[in-house]
Each structure stands twice: as C-alpha cells, then as structure tokens.
Length: 579
Image (cartoon, rainbow, N blue to C red; front, side, top):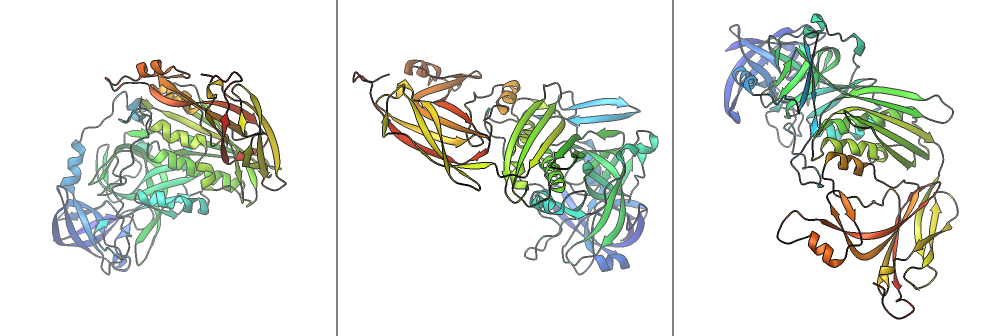
C-alpha cells in the first residue's frame, strides 16, 4: 500500500509526504501490532524518522491508518513503525478517575479546570514512599550502538531560560523519563492565552505540532509531538506514551517548529510553545489523549534572590502538577534561578526560606542555611528542607494534598562562616549521675585557627554505673525525636521539626526506652509499661525509641560534622546504683 502522512517541518502548517507500507509486526507490544513503513520523501531520506513527528497521521486511500511512532537509531533508511489507529481509538473508552477527591472541576467560559491532587499512597505509615518503577520510555530512539531496535521516537524537550550547567545536572533524571532536553526558544506571553473559543481550539488539526508543557514563565520546558486525530474536544497524539503515567493532567499547547536538525543518530525538530489549547488527560501505551475543553492547573514557583550590593532578582515560573515531576521541576527552577542570579564561583553562605502553600492548610515555612564553597550547585540546594518536603508531601501516606504554590526567598552572603566539629572531650575519664559537666567541643573554621567552645551538659541520673554515649553533631545532621505520624496534620507537624544548621546538638543516650503511640512520645517508661504497650498478641503496638537527653548550643556560624565519645558514669556516693 502507498499513502501519505502529515507533519510540520517548519512553522505551524502540516505538510504531506509519501509513505509505503512494508509489513506488519504482530504483537510488537501487548495486544498491539506495529505497521512498518518507509518514507519516500527527499527531506526524510536525508534526516530519517525525526524526533517530534511522533503521532504524524498516515492515510491510505483517504482513510486514517495510524500514527508514526517508532524508528531505529542510526538507520540508513527512513523506516518507521506506525501505531494502528484502532489501538489508539480504543484508549478513549478507558474510564477516567476524575472525582471529588482526585480532581477539582470548575466551569468557566465552557472550559473545565482540572487539578489532580496527590498523596494517599498505599504504604506503611511512617515508611518511605514506594520506589518509582522504570518509566515506559527508557528505550529511547537514540539508544546506543550496542542494541539497535525499533523504539518509540523520542519526544524532544524544548527548554529555555535555564542555566545550561544546571540543566546538565538534571539531564539524567530527564532522560530517565524518556525526554531529551534541547535548547530552544521559550513560550509567548502567558497572559495572551485566553479562554475564548479561539483559545480553546487554537490550530489543533491532524498533522499539527502539539506540545505538553512542563514548565512555563521565566523558564520553559515543553515536550513536542504531532496530532493524529481530532474528534470534537478529543485529541489523539504521539502514537506512544510520553511518560506512561496513565491519567495525568498537563497543559497542552500549540507548537511552532523552527527547523529540523538532521543527525546521524537522531534528527529532531526545534520548536517553541505557542498558546494553550487544552489539557493532556491520558498517557497510555498507544497514544496520549488530550481534552480541548479543559485546562490543567500548574504549581506557581517564585524565587527571590538577594545578594550583596544588588537589587533582588525575582524569577517566576509554573511547573507541572505531578507526584513524580513536581519535585524535580521545582528543584530545577530554584537552582537555575539562584545560579543565574549569583553565578560567582566563590565561598558563600546561602540562607533559604521555603514557604509551601497547601490548599486548605496553614502555610509551611522551612529554613535552611548552607555553606557553598565554590558557589551554589544543584547538590547543595536539592538537600534543602523545602525541596525535600515537596516530594514527602506529594507522596504522603494519608490523604491527597493540593500544592497551591511554592515561594523561595534566598539570601546570599559572600563569607566563610562555617565551622567543623573535629573533636569532643570531657574533663575526666568518668562522671557522676546528675552532674553538670563542661563538654569541650573543638571547632575548626573553614579558614582560621581551631578553637574550643565549652557546652554544659547534665548527665542523666539513670546512667549511674553504666557507660554513657555522647554524640555531638551539627543541627543539620541531628534528628529530633518525632512520633510516628498517624494523620496528615501530624505528618505536617513532623516536617517542621528540625534543628537549625547553626546549632551544635549534644545527645546523651540513656538506657531507657520510650514509646511512640497515637502521635505522642512517651519517654522514661518503666519496663512493665513498655511491655504493656507492645503486646505480642497484636500487630498494632507502640513503636520504641531510645531516649536521649539533648542540649542545643546555638552558634553564629554554619556547623558541619559529627563526633561521639563514651564515658563511664560512677554510682552515687552511697555506693548504691541510681535507677
């Protein structure tokens, strides 16, 4: 059979090119065949199957056969695979999970606004979220020489507004999602994206370029493919998944193709987003499905960077609302904004205040203070409490949460106010229970002479006749005792319990066990009480923890390091062991 396909080579107008059917590969994927075709067009003879033409509709005898979706890397001929249209159409009957708990639908100008909430994982309470499985598209079109195979054509990820070095730091995470970043132009003015009839439809037609927006604003990130089929408000595109995430809500935009970049390994389209035209609602094996009558909300992120001798620089962007994507994209925006505002490779102390707004909840404010030798980096920022908390919140095991916005205030000071804990010591080899002793902590500044600070600590009376273990750590390394969360409010409260990074935390371990029960910490329990709270005849029992007496010593510098020592605690003066 001989037919024609439609795709955009430049601009926004689809152009036809000739294709010839070679064969059919049965059961290439579960319950899915792939039709092999050869493109017979001078442009594709030179470039091969192009990344960005995923979804290009193929017509034979005027009837839609399917969408170009697969190809080989380093192929000498423009041979590709077509996803049959029957398989793509069948995905439309898949039921949606939209309900009051998972999505909010607000009618306005005939357009529905969708907000998919996150959270409520089926995981053990207090445990980590389940590991993320491998994405569908780990086998990208540009795989290595070692394993040539028919793979899904990559979705070129057009990025702009990001610092190149920072983007490179995140490249591995983006490639793991089947996305290849390509430097390109950003989107137009977001305010021009109206909600009238023209904005609803845009120029969405079979063969037109369509984008899935991940970041917009001062930074932009859009994955681009091609529309296969339009039926009313329904759009089928790509012919393969973008992430393989199932039901997912992301903005869908019209795209403009600037040029095709030929390559021996993988040619690709260079493109930029235009106006918003709908929402991606399904990301399935054979295609992605869009709704032209809907809009997907995003998470606003504002970064305000203040440095010495300069006016604050403010960066505003919106990132995709998704459990897997939001933490990475928010971290990318914050890191790029800070590196762009303060690019000097110099020693600096960075103070970060992250304010997380959850719908219907009191805002969460988390503070960090980081010493960054040789300037800020992705590694120094992704460990901040604010960015870590986003992932924890979206994967919380209790109930869905809606992240309304993230505001990050950053203050950069070019100084070396950091000390490392290098040694600790006591005046003698043994101490008495109940005694207050001066713990000497040796501190070494980043640049300067070592000095000692004395911290008075009390030896617990319960340690008489035993060996005491004393741990001295920076506030960023010490963990406060927190009860096991049994509800979302407890979970949020635990997120806000931490020691400041400018503190030295001294912990004296006691021989007693405490218990965490119903969101409360019960220290100093008698053995009989502990046994009662942890019966062997049932699984729901109190969690035990080792009780520690803590002393917080505040400094004016960022503290790093950890040291510990053990010391014998004498019996009391009467020779009777204190218990």
